[in-house]
Image (cartoon, rainbow, N blue to C red; front, side, top):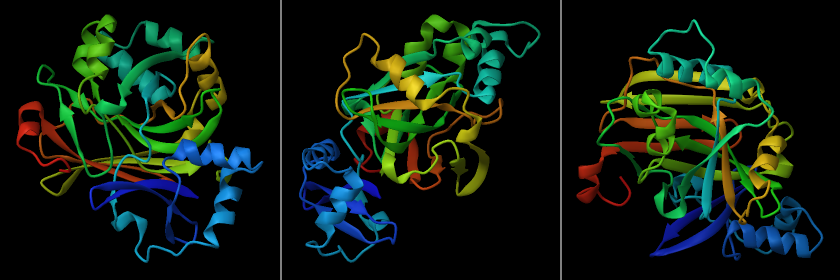
Length: 301
């Protein structure tokens, strides 16, 4: 089952898409309220939804055709770095200007017990499907990072999975690792969606295919694919380190790192379209705009 939110008549509603493709509107205000209702009833969220569907009528249109927004208002989005070999290689390339003949701190964190975790975004900075992500004005080497996102409750338990785009400035991070927050955090530098796949309905989260496609003037210019089986760390371990001596909020999203990096000579440009597809979750689509273009752009570009 996949949870989504959509806009209709200036309101936002919660919905569910069944495995058969039918879409239903739910009465719960948000995903985490739905999870709380299911737990109070002593059921998994998927089982609880099944009990509700008998009294609901389908919307009659595919969920993908609705005006989708972020599947939840994630109070915080965190991210993990260097969790895939491909990411390790890319970070080393940035830090050494292409000289890959020496170990770096990225090599060390890749093999260390403690993962790299950093704050990525807040609800106000995060956009959903169909909306525009933003390019930093002081970077000339920017890329999307396609990532599996964990939706967590306040205890760190994994409630569901979503797709995420961790926009990144490779030149800023490569210049100095202390610039990481500036290389990662700015307005509209993160997108999530279009759905949250309930955790209990995913047989093996380490067997999901991930694809990233970038279009420029409707021509496909980047296409990369890989899978979560290449992840170096366990998902529960990443969540465990995030909650260690930390306050977690219901609906926190933890992006688990990227296994897809565009070619080193590539950088995003205004007007590009990014598609991030994760098997069983859906395809997250965002357009790219420069900061100054956001002032005149529609809310949903």
